[in-house]
Image (cartoon, rainbow, N blue to C red):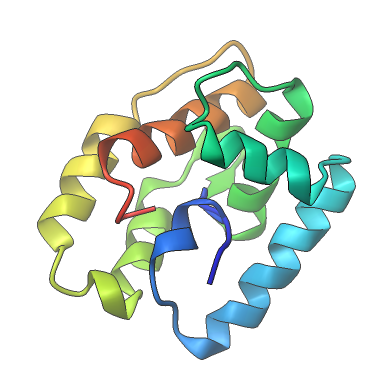
Length: 134
């Protein structure tokens, strides 16, 4: 399955997710793409480049949207415990709890100039530090 992240939709691209979550993630990803006017091509291009180039604000807000819809972003802040539970529930990550914890601790401190930027920086941090977790 190729999806978020969160971010996590992008983040989950490399892992196997429980089938009951797959449909939810697909729907979240689609809704956030539509809400932020992001094309699938733009998203794929950003992922392929490893987010080397600064993305437009809409792509950053797409990342925030995914985190929000998955309950991992509330009241302007990253919800570390919700993200941790989400990642711990992914079967492929069952034996990687130490990596999840380490990555969360390193990435949760990212701060941008606004909420979309912060959500993007947190998601990018996850992808850079441990693509398997994302």
